[in-house]
Amino acid sequence: MKFRLKAIGLTVAVAVVLTACGGGGGGSTTTSATPSTLGGTAAVGFPIIGAVVHVTCASGSALISQPTSATGAWQVTLSGQTFPCAAEATGGTINNVVNTTAYHSIALNSGILNVTSLTDLVVANMVQSATLSSWFTALISSALAQIDAAKITTAMNLVQTQLSLVQLGTTIDPMTSSFTPAAGSVLDDTLTALRIALANASLTHASLLTDVSAGASFKAPSGFATSIVNAYLGTTSGATTAAGGSTNTGTNSTTGLASNGTPSFVRANCSLIKPDANTYIGCAGNAVANFTSLSMVDATDGQTCTASYSNGTLTVTKGSLTIAALLNREMFDGLTTWGSGTSETLATLVPFTMNSGTATVVVSSTTIKWNAAGVIKNIAGTASTANLTAGSSVDQKLSCTQP
Image (cartoon, rainbow, N blue to C red):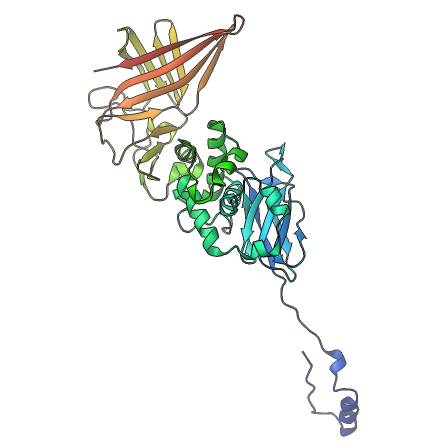
């Protein structure tokens, strides 16, 4: 901007000299626009710390970020690049373990771009490749130029539908929504649920990429979407609310009996979510009323069972067999409203292991069934007793019922 000099108080001679010298143009200054940036969060349910993010665009030089921060944050400064741009995060550590997986994402504009396990799945579906590192290395301008918003949206919607990620709704974009990888963030808790579900199903991110790379024909592995819903309901976000459903309020109580004097289910701290044809209800640990010495009968052999529940631990004894299960997260399925149907089933999500001398007892599953009135009707479980020295194991089952 050129400075304007007022003529007041100046002589004609001075004015002539200034004119001859160019009117003060030598003192001009310029302002430049703030450079555009591209950056976001690299995370997989934990932040990816110390990773490097490479960015390749439809035109312009490739870019490399500084190592990601303790929260997985990264950023590059754009200088003449043309969108779309592809990003790849490599290296670093995840929960103090060296990261050996590359994760990818696509940007159509400057601003926020997250690189996560979920964006990796979306890219794999869109480009129909399970080997995204090779795809990224071989990227050429013409291939990037063919990517548009419609293709990204199609892949995003399919992945979210198949994995039952209804909590993201239409307002949370895995690629462009700002988030911090911490409990309580819906997006981060979704990534956490994906990570937990993979581990529980004995699947890997690589194997899921293979499934996702089928393009429009992608179908989630059997039961995997339910596992994700299950895991999400165990996160901070999932435990308090669920998009597309409703929250059931009630008295937060760990004690109480049903009208006939038997232990009851306390409807407290529960969320209902309907990701598909089924409706799922997840409740905090204090949703089950504490009880002691509940007498039941095993339907298979007529033996007496004794059950008790105390602040998250269910213990059932039948003769010499004792099963203990940690009910850290309760999961009700197949419901549309509270108390519908003839029974509501609670399943433990955390197997419980007991070590005793040379034997190890693993409770593979435990379920509790209530009737529509909220009365416990059945407790069933399976215990596998392994003799560590003899190398043998015996499965024992119980199914304790009360009228």
